[in-house]
Length: 460
Image 1 (tube, rainbow, N blue to C red):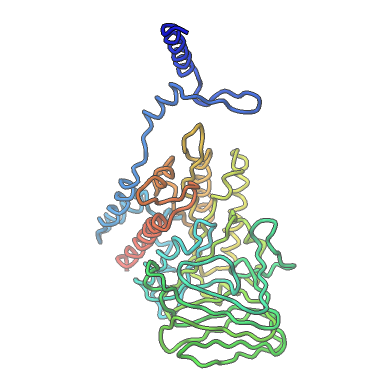
Image 2 (spheres, rainbow, N blue to C red):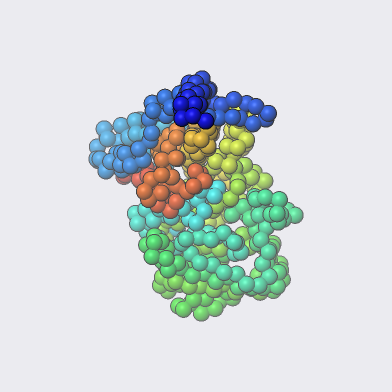
């Protein structure tokens, strides 16, 4: 073939590709059950005109808005009505959290219980809120966790040996379910048969928050003990003290106080019982419990025995309940009708917590931005903004506060930029935050809540 013919052939190919680039629709062409895509003019123009979220600018603006804090009524008026990082309150009632703050100021132990999906695993977000509240109101330790669990925490090390079997009400088809509804305050129950030990060790991770490197007391929440059941706890400062129970089937709480902050404790059991929670706590102050429910959409709580949950909340002195859900529902949230059905389910959960924790306030945190590949681009999942707005409306309509994580991080198409950030603030699944990103979220949440506390103090 002559050189001129080769040139003409190549020019013809380029011309054909150019025409294809001009006429190919941005969404591609459906063919044989598949979608054929090709670089095209529409996508090029769209990408050129698209405003990308500058993560550093977003986070710097968040931090700047809190650094500008002033003890003036005008500052707080603007914060409550204009600051996008504020916690939205039912009826715009700026005294909504006042009962929580009054409890925090008492010389007792008050709890913030943070339920969430896998976004809060490894104590993400919870640990930053805990650190901020404990520095302000006092406290140490990491709070409640199951006696037996394969979910790790970045803030405490725990091991169990003996006759323990865990039953949970969330998870996939391999999850072992109990034959009853007594799942308790952690949405799970550990059945003890014969005896065993649970060992707690404060973390030695240098990156962990300061206040979790020791604890001052251990609490056990249990029920339905067998005759002759006994349990004792000890550390290097407390000798074994057995707790004997005979024929008592109701919920029980026992707390061992140590003479000073410790890094290790062992709980030794003999007999049978249902173990609902173990907790490493301070004597007084505030505790934030991290309760991750992987794969959960936050619609399971109404299936937990109401009397058991109510007694647990009262015994553990729950003052603020945080529900952080919505992300796991996105794959099925394809229509407005489906989102409305989810609203109804979430409404039922909020009403349930109003019933079982009458001394507590409720704060709902909706999903973060979530990235999905569409036409080779990472974009926000379809209908995610609609889901966020619906959850906000549902919370406020049911006397619960709402914090808009989706818009705090930059709104639509922000997750892709959080992943690209150096260091990465989110993982390659475009769903979960890295520890660095979770800290940014936790700090923003803490600053927002404490701004309401500062106003409470000023109003006093």
